[in-house]
Image (tube, rainbow, N blue to C red):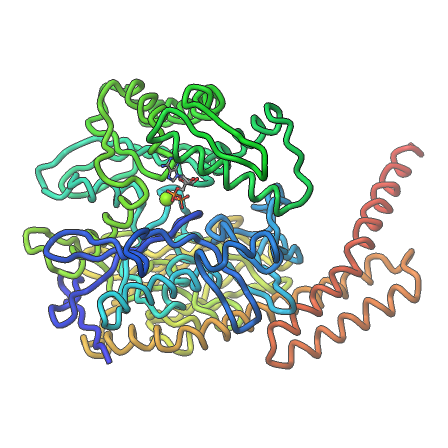
Length: 615
Ligand code: ADP
Ligand code: MG
């Protein structure tokens, strides 16, 4: 078994095992790469052709899962069990996604709008983390079979605009797939590294990275100084990409050739033909193909007219990013093209014109992020002696939240010094004191991590559960001393403590803690999911009780009895060990109470109006 040895001072993995792979976990396609003879190598399919693994997952049954090309045909024949674009769901709650769910063929749960979403397939509930883990497992398998060895360490890229929750979700997905995620790297940073930009300390540059993928567009402006990459502005459109260009061709053809689409699968066939045309037109000036027995054709100039409005939109985003960065196009030193859709000559020309310089497209634009991730991984592995690594914190630091869960505030491998804050609230009405347990480690339940300190924030003015705003701030200084400050923001009550996180942990123990977190990832996440389902269930039971009390004036005895019965069934499920049963009962209770809650709102509003009308 691989032993993880970390050099505490540099944060690098020791020589014994110096292979860390780089992964581009994309919305449409994912790839894995590694470094050989100082060059990035993209892992390709068995025929040695494409390195792209379509980010598609098909659940033939609960246990039989297909990823990539094998899942593609099921988008048409079994859409409810075929997951695409899971990256869009990472770290998101239902309320983040309301406008989007109707576009998905699969089912997203909407029981608790502010919690992280879950996807229902048959009678099983999956988190986006579990789904992404399937893609990562496939990539891990590919690189392992190419290199004929186990691979358990990776760097994974994310868009520069990903927030903390989205990054954490990506990290967790890696861990669930059996990968120790040494760092989450911004996609534009990886793309710059692939072009060698920022690799030497002297390299001071401002770089624009234009990324047009399958479903999203991003522009990022980076400032690189002393080997440090700073994202100074990002902009983009999360619903604009190659898919929309395909769609434009489809509509055009439908009109021009009067095509009749009689089924979803015919629609899919036409869409694929449109994508084929689009790709062909990146290399040639004309395309001819067919849809069934009808010949279809498109010239490059016709195509350019079709996509002009969409590319113009991306340029407006570029202008907005430049404005935020307070820069004009001439002050950009390098422009890098990323994403399969930047192969289109019209896109390259438009971007090049705006920035007034040739753009970088020497690398395959859909492989450049994975290649850069591999370079970053190689630096972390300590294989590039010329490169200096900044001090990092070797284990995650966080606090205990309801259900004994570890909530990470500073993830491991974060540069020090650093400071992060998060907001929490109380779970009980009138709660005056809050115990804050500070922990170090990678496991999901604090019981499996190392406790560093505990203190009590007292004198919180009594308020209903969920109202107090508690900010917990972690400040880690360059000597590795952690200051934890807890503050109730409404009243200003605060309390702080100093701890020394690494105290008493030797390298061997640290290695064991890291390894444990991967070995137990599956079981940890199940326990975490169960704890979360229980928390959610308890909240539902509580609110059902409150709801009956507040609305007994107009609820029928049958309705009250039904709510009580469903709540009781939920309470019973909470005692058991199945998150799926808890989830199903939450669903049932929710399905019954939602229409009543709407009615309650109407009753209250009508009551309030009446009150006004009298006076
Ligand atoms: P993502 O980063 O969103 O996962 P990719 O960078 O892999 O996506 O880009 C996928 C998109 O690139 C698809 O819409 C695909 O049709 C498009 N694409 C791939 N090759 C070409 C090409 N030669 N010309 C135009 N578009 C292309
Ligand atoms: Mg991409």
